[in-house]
Image (cartoon, rainbow, N blue to C red; front, side):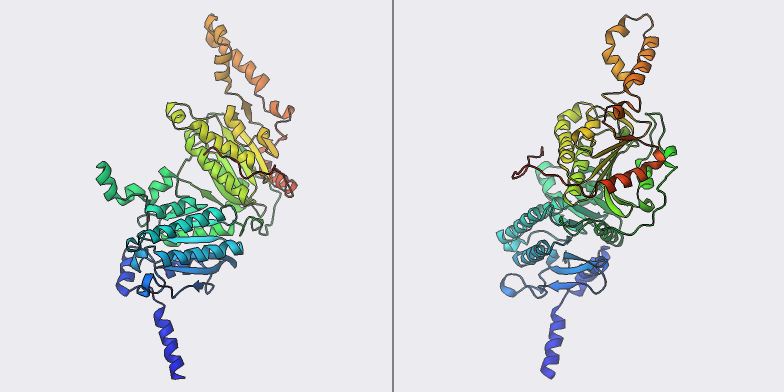
Length: 506
């Protein structure tokens, strides 16, 4: 009996989380330990740990080898997780550390459950040499294998440098915390040695940099508590895998009318407004989760519910660059559309777009190629797709924003819609250039020609009369019309020709 009690005491003593000094330093930096983070993320008492006694090469390291891995539940639904432990060898990745991550990733894929990675690591364990690099390669290969099958969420809560940074980039969504999270391929010292440029860790790869400039971070938070709370919220909107529908909830529906919508959007096409306010009127209880809020703000991407069902919303944002599409906005929306399509999330596209951003910087930066990504994403999407044209829909940008011509299932328009190759004034200047140059009073003639062009080719019912818009609706009935449309399309199926895969214009 005494021997068994001693063995039990030994068992408890072996489950360590690093020494007290390392834990205290972690807390001084405003960071929680790996196990504290898992307690915030997972339902209480649900975590089942794997390989708690794993050690590094030669068996001389500390138990866990700097990563806590296993499975638990979020709101009762199964997820697989690993959390790097900076209090043990700086969370560095060696062969045993990587093997634990490989195991939990394999289990997530086999069980059709999301995988959440909590990153806080000094990088590859240099003393293990190429074996550490091989471990990273195994993680990346599994991420690609699982892509589009199970949701992958990466949370950066500390350093994530070198090759390790590719893991968050391969994930479906990446969260970062200000002040404590940094992510870059080469650190400030290397940058200074190679280029002479002096830059801090935060300036090179902080949360705000990746949230607003590079677009690597999908969400940026001020602290770990709010960050992990939003990870839980995101998981509540996602299916466990690509063979399941997104989780629906009961919703006590009213008549769906939203009279406020008619007052939100100015009739004048050049007057700005906040597309977030429109989304808030359309979704249940005004609640939605915006993705990449700080990056490419001229397009809005969000997850929310309409009538209890999860939807992905894409909308032009007139508050930023008048809602034009540019290289960053095209990339942002294309990736979001492809994610929604992979995981059976219907798409609602809110259109108010004056075109693509002109200029040499955009053309040299690949505006055509990046715009083609969004075009490809919509054309490929087989989920139910509803388009709502609020105001402007000009030129190629109209086509790209899920028009009927590229496979939209249901196209709705407000009475304020203007669908045309370009705005009336620009069109008149091109088409009637010679007449205007020869006119005694070009201003008067231009005004008359603009009025005629608008009346003949840009009136709200022009596209509807030709079958390119299915219905012109009262703005107050937008939510109702979308709900009915999604209900009509719920059992949509689309067959595609057999192929290995398409060639996305990356």
